[in-house]
Length: 350
Image: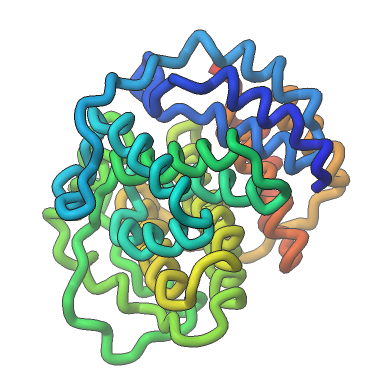
């Protein structure tokens, strides 16, 4: 990543200012995340054409009503209609404190709602943090505020048991213990966020958060967990819907990995626990098969994969390809290339 490759990101943020977190079709606004991912992959020239094609899908942000007051911020969690209020509150915090300090404080507060809006909150925060790590600009600080606001406004908790499991295990063993809702008990509720509500009537899920031990090396744990969910993707992504579902189990962990260096260990360990829980929730609601074991290494290079993702144009495909390449560069695994290639071949830009 170079500073010059991010010039188009600031330009894109200027165009996207004033838009909300929801598209006209009710799905999440991916534009700032895709713009950052393209820059991170060394394709800044692709940003503005992609934004131009996507812009008609955007909706204005809701009008502001009242600043989120520090003493009652919990009351505004999960209020999508208060996105603008959250955004203005974060802008003020970021004026008063360095962004890593604000990030650490709110990562600890928002971690239990990791799954909100199908994890798009944490994913957007991860992209904003990486752009700030390249260079701090007013537009990127504002984007971090908007990203945190998107997470707060879509905050959603999953059923969690107060009792920790007696014997936490490594993720590779823990994933086999995750209970999956039987297909005959599942309901098609229209989107990922609504479907996660099925877990409220599935008490077997609540102890899942305690299946892994987060007390060891966080980076190693994240590497293991991200590869597992890439393999879960390969085992369970059978059509467009399941492909999009299981993409988020990888992109959310990839985003978190980029945030970890800038927050304290307490917030980091909490976030990893809830990231694991969110990935398991996707598996419990949509999974049917165990993770893929035997995977053929990809034959094409990274540049070819990036070019194909950009030609595809879908927001999930671009972000997923970038996340897979990012994690593969840290701890190589054939699962990442295979997963990105599968997504490119399965999803077409809508």
